[in-house]
Length: 332
Image (cartoon, rainbow, N blue to C red; front, side, top):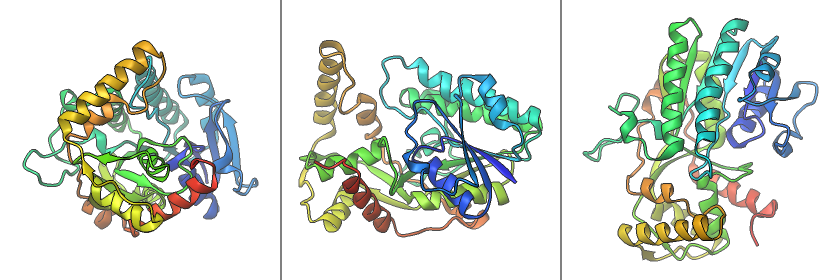
């Protein structure tokens, strides 16, 4: 079997590619010409082929899909700020549509689309969100979440056309090889560099990135086309996450809880200065603080029971992330 993995040079995608190669599957990783390839360099070259392409270039997608039996569509434009927000929609929606179309035409027999819990609903009564929690486009905060919500609709439309698309919704992966890093990885980097004097009252569902990769493969093996599966593990407040990092590193966790209104105003001013006066990306995108108003807590029991999603200790994943960030020059 040969599998096409989009986003294979990135955080989650590289773990998916690695797991496939370790299990003897021939992998073709789609990568943009300017993508950093470090996350794939240690993989067996006899089973790994890196092909140049872009989700916004349908011709390159047709070339990449040829001869592949399976597709793991992990790639996404994951940014909480962009000078041109339409770039997110072109990649996440139009790119997904173009990729699934060539997969349909090529007769690919296994497709897993990686979405995000950001496209799911959050109950207002404080209970955990799940795959069926009601949600609408109007409740999406920011262009990233909205683009992924609409991309999920595209993926489901291809199920009706006969393409066996299974959808996964990872929560907040942590671990090694977070090369860009992701917004969550940036929290870890900021903590290691002692740039977190305070925290806000918010929460995330953490999961080991290796478990996300395992869950992605399990979705292809056991998932039902058209179904969603939350790939998550442990619900933690930001304060608890920072305390875990303190125990791992010996760096004191911040003790000051910043009121949400203060964070909202401070980040709003920072974004205004950065984008309008300095003409650069803000250090803390405003969409991030708007998302922090809600506890992103979810129930992953469907994936645990139906797919066999592993639930590895998240503190060990945080430990590996710390070691990797330190070893790769992210900590000054």
